[in-house]
Length: 281
Image (cartoon, rainbow, N blue to C red; front, side, top):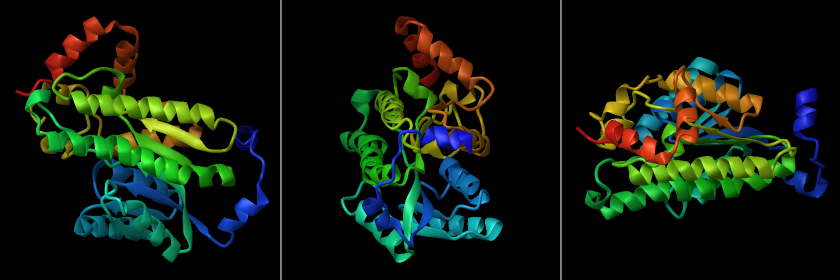
């Protein structure tokens, strides 16, 4: 209770604004929630008795994931098929929330993609798709739901960054740069909202054995074997760090050391090492 009071030390109730949420119930909205880290994060929130809304493009896997969470934890779990980069994505999510008389108490911006290989050889549409999803959609969703969290003085945003966000990444240049944006963006908003009762956290894992690497065409790069951590372990650390109010969580036994190394060492040293680890083989 004391910790919660400290987190809300600057929050003051705005009764007219709060009236808009009367009779509504909280939900956790997870983008990219049908598999991998997003699915495991959704399970973590559901295990703590939170109703969950999973958002992803493919309805089939999404409904299967929702059914498993519903069966395992007995909470309402909603599948919403939507491309968060599409112009109507916000309206689709808002409509799904309104139909259930709910609001987004927590937003988990997990959806993201990667593109590997020399930047000049990457298809322009692939690069733009990456930036749309990893940067623009994450920013748009955060801007949309954060004001309501500040009004209520609770809830928060958990953004999926990456260990790669601490350094430039040759052969995944746009991806690493997008995750640097996520780290900077998250830490800045966390500072802006300090004391208002809202948690803002970036989860920055290293290599995770999911389908992401195959889809990014980075399946045989050396970095994949650098102390990988399971999606479930990443979600466990991310959820705990979010609940504790941490601004950045780097899960795994070795990844925090790698993050420290990348922060303190000159880039003329770190970037050639990263280049060797990330170069497709």
